[in-house]
Image: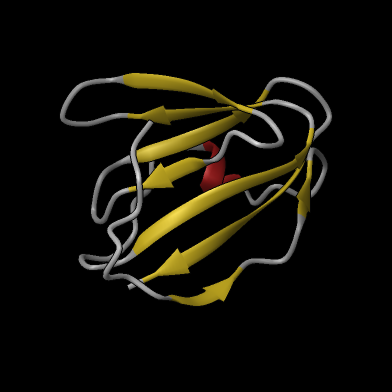
Amino acid sequence: MKELPKSVKSYKRTPEFSSESIPQGLLRAHKTKEGTWGKIILLKGSLRYRILEPEIEEIDLSPGKYGVVEPAILHEVEPLTEVSFYVEFYR
């Protein structure tokens, strides 16, 4: 599992999203800005985190197993069950 660099600090987070409230932009290819990292934190359910470059990698997230979003790398998510999650951003 990828890890956040020790040098980054949290600066904001999204509201909690449910299966019904996930923004459409998260369900299709998107990326963070250069220098911005993300941490996808599941509170309930199962979510597939798909990293689209440089090679496709799929990681099934669950409570206790978070996903790390690297800066400027295309990725998307797909709920596998009813979910509740948020994304915390670091730089």
